[in-house]
Length: 472
Image (cartoon, rainbow, N blue to C red):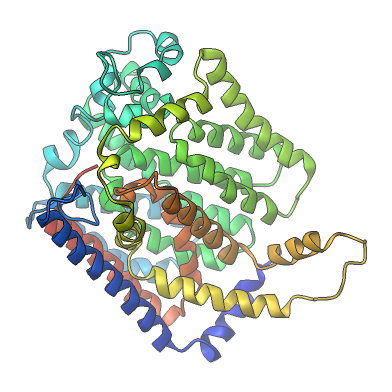
């Protein structure tokens, strides 16, 4: 089995080239960014600037509170930080994934129940701006798809609600299908979001292990379980989006064109869950490049899956590109016209840090060091088959391995999304499908420090959920 070069070289870098003081400096910079975003947000809100976020940079309201989910969350955190963390290093793979998923479900539910069963789960997806508001009105799915684009713009009698209008019809379809099989209502929808969102604890480690980074898969799994972003996974539709994207990428990593086709189908559907998932293409290309069998048939199978789903939506009457054009116009019919780009373009990154935890900066820093060490060790001899220079460099880049390239791809995606101006606020949930791949970088943290960083993750989630009333 091939082992990613970064996993062999990173420990040496951790011992010699990257003192832990650097990790603390990185965390301090993150804390300063977060503090600045909070303070500037307070000032702007008091001046009446249209941030439309009472607890900027988060879309939430300041409301210290506790609930019967509080002790449950503490217990889950202690179990994961204690025996769970030790067990994850030696457990058999199948039971580890099953236990990880169950722990993630428990953690997400416990955090949601801090707000109470009704506020935290049942009523999360029922407000007028949410998808469930539209479900009962969809009596004919083909007709809904054919007329979907015409109802995107606001200020017309039959315009879609905010979340439905802001996404392709796949997002609404998920909840319509749930209703059709007898799982309608807020409780069933919320539980579905939690159960699907928790599958990232399976999909991301499976991807890493399949790509030859088995040790990294075990290292990353506990951080995915105690993900601060679980505050928004329970319960929002973005939890479903996150699970679908992660599962699609995991299938792309598995050997053989059939798995690639299945992955392509899932990612094709993901493209019709959120317009922003066109950026997932960067992660998909990275996974395909890291596969051991980089055959043309694999690439064609994945592309065929995406094309097949897109073709089905087109035949049903929905054209993605037309929907996106209308969504841009709808976006600036609402709060986006007021929200200042000059604040959100950097405050978004502070919100991202809340979803990932302050471990992100030190982890990315360690990853950059590991990448530099691994790159310098790659054979710099010219290509013997006459390949172009960029081809040679691409082949060398692939040898950096998944623990470097996947976080790098996720960071690129987040940067593009941020600069686009189409993600002003609420990114703590909108960017969750990218957050889980950024956290792959924690594989480069020294094992002796992981418990402390994981404790910080748990505390971040608990503080956010007890100080703020978050909005999905």
